[in-house]
Length: 181
Image (cartoon, rainbow, N blue to C red; front, top):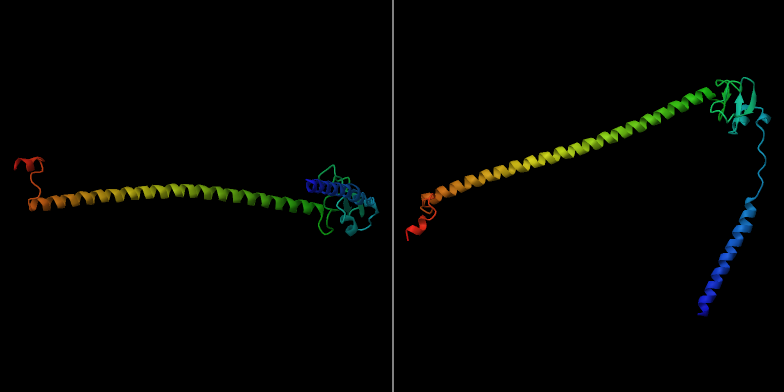
């Protein structure tokens, strides 16, 4: 009994130690202050400006401004789309938008084509299964019919042989066998 109490005590002590570590040590390490982000206007060239995702470089005015997040596209008052650079210096914003729209369209069309192909393949498969099942049923019926025809022919041949050798007397009168006795 005492070993069970000791085990529970050690388990409790271990849990408390882990809890203290998590609360005081881990949170203490996480509470570091990050330096304030540098203002976009301090960047003087395109390369240093566009390396920050919140900044936009305008070649028309050769200045770095903060990207207007209220609009999806920067308005003409900030910079013309053909002169604006965001992300990379070698691609203007207008070309970036067109490229992204084309790639998005290609991806959507590809997804639609794949879905259509899959649906058509499934329909073909199900109709193919129906056709195969119908063909097998027809074939079974033909085999059954031929089997019945052969059975009838075989019975006719056997009856003819029985009649020839007198084993089959008057077939119209099934009780003829009993009258002769």
